[in-house]
Image 1 (cartoon, rainbow over the protein chains, first blue to last red):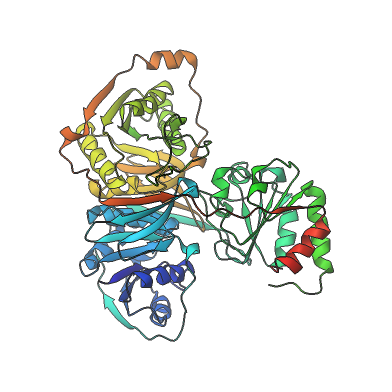
Image 2: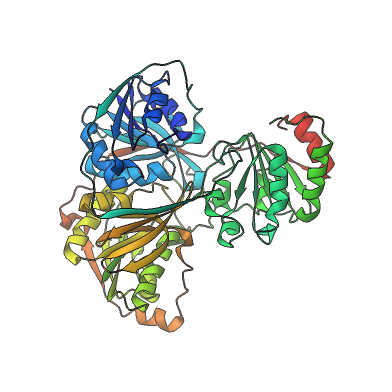
Length: 317
Length: 249
């Protein structure tokens, strides 16, 4: 039994969730190999070879892997799939787009978005926006699994020295063309891995008012999140959305501001360690999951919050 | 162009889910059911493309028990031309769904297949990608904008880092995000007209595909409950609690 993990990276650096997926993958089998498909991504292959849990890195270098074209990735992964009992990746937009295409070609019923490895064939996964947990057993010979990254700690990044093997590319698809990527650059921590997240909802009323949130985020070194309503209304870009169809976050502290707490939003944040809700509607469902609820007008509460934070001598970053 | 749109009947997104006591699943008896929300976006987009004169026919398809037809009827009421209902008695996995859809695609020869990016019941997010693989067609998942070009689509996709734009040649599969468009409501006259539109019924067993489950559902349970929190009276108290009690700042 051995596991092939598909690395997510930007050709220079390993994307952080790959390390969380490595932890889950190594719980399935210690014989863990990582496949790096990229263009001039030698640094990525090298970084992954230093992860103690990784036994081997397979590196395929070609310009057709510069971007995540699922069709190109799939063809390369299928070439290597034969030798492995499990193919795994993280269950973010990278793995969600890619893994079912691999699974279908291997005639395997994929297990999506697992939050626990029970055994090599049995996993725990949330269904119905996390309102139920299903224990499922895969009876396929070869298993395709995606891993909810926030449910596993990131693996240690150094100390290992796995062998790096070069491999040839597969054929490229002519029917899909990458045109562009609009990436939102930010100095803040990544939403998915931040220790503190502060999110705004419809109650923010407009995009400019998110300044009240970003001021506090700066102070706490927090990432900024948003409800779907705030993204739909154009207050903030989609990469900030937390929820069933957005990102799932599990920070130490989640501060929900002007968010009512629809089931779909709770799905993305209710596993956070400490939850704060600030909302002027005392009946809002967000209070049912909050450790600390403050029933207040956010336009008064946020500036006060910032000034109270400024009074503190020290703040954990 | 001809567009096939796949729709799924699921528990309505507003319903509070209850887990069955025997751990065999969630309660679905006497629970409000609706079309999976992003499937409504898929239908809407197809209708908009047809209204723009770029598609000739829209076929809505669902796979499920007898009542799943309601979702096709709703699609017909907002602009689909005809429907297909593939009857299955049990819940089937996305791999089986994509095998059935492949058979229908081979029969109907659509240029595009649209569906929601994810069903809100099993949260699998698989079917569109699997169908694309089985047909060896390009896939454009999580679409928030679609531009129809000559024999190609330019699709903007919502990804973790922001937005990505790709071009896929037709025929292609598109899975739709909730932000793709604003689904319309069916008007009463259109609901009446939809009743006259044809829905072809097909038994899944007649399609000659293996739809047996590969995954055993061992048990379904409630997630651990959070312990009840408290309300604080002021911002000052909140900051003190976070600092001294929760110790998170």
